Image (cartoon, rainbow over all chains, first blue to last red; front, side, top):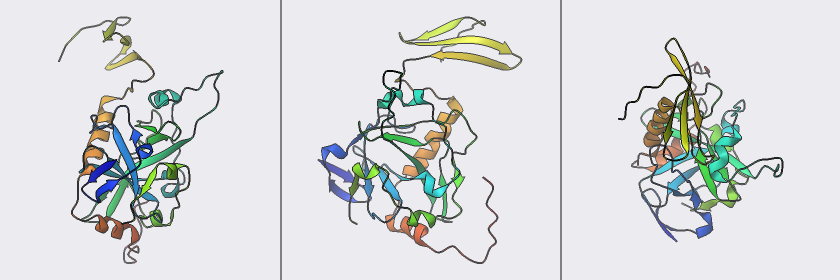
Amino acid sequence: MIVNTTRFGKLTIDEDKVINFPFGIPGFPELHKWCILTPDGQLGISWLQAVKDADVALLVADPDSLFPEYNAEIDERDLGPIGVTISPDNPEVPDLVMRVVLTVDRDNGVVTANLRAPIVFNIGTRQAIQIALRRGDYSVRETLTRPTEVAKATVNDGMEQLSVATGT
Amino acid sequence: MLLLSRKPGQGIRIGSDIIITVKEVRGRQVRLGIEAPGEVPVYREEIYRAIQKANRAAAAPDESTQSIYDIFNKPKPESKPDNTEDQ
């Protein structure tokens, strides 16, 4: 399918790379279909691009490589919308991957990450949701003191099954 | 905005599946119980607003994608001491 993007032009991606956010994300509740673009496979950051709005794309990164002490306590009940139901009959935890949204201030080079509301992806069902952590006091705008560390991060935690390499 | 007054123990039903119950009022704080289907997300409003604002700022289109990658690849300046470690 064709995905128009402001940053990367017109892309052709497989239907099975489209990720469904049942509630969109705060700020864009009407946008349910997104895809992960990795223009440079070397960097530990990707773009979460809205399929239906060419302008809307967010930088996302693996929080473990940026904040080794990040301990996001995720309540399983918050994952119900993306098909995670853990019960005594069904105790297996599906393949989940977490990313945090980065905001870049291009005037001063300051990069911040939203540690309060990570995005959780269910790789098997290709669904995702941005959840607000119920516990902990993480910031919505946590400064990255060393943005260049992201350049060294490798991405092979399952997200590569959903990523589209755009090769720009 | 619909305004309703409730006493502790009383509830509000939204649609057919969402019930908010006033559990306790203590001073200026109200404790609420929320029953909603598992697939409906529930947020504290101010947190939702903060996430909304952060997402909109993060998604704003920019002139040059390459300049963002320059920030990530740029070596850290040596001049200033690193005094931003307050996490």
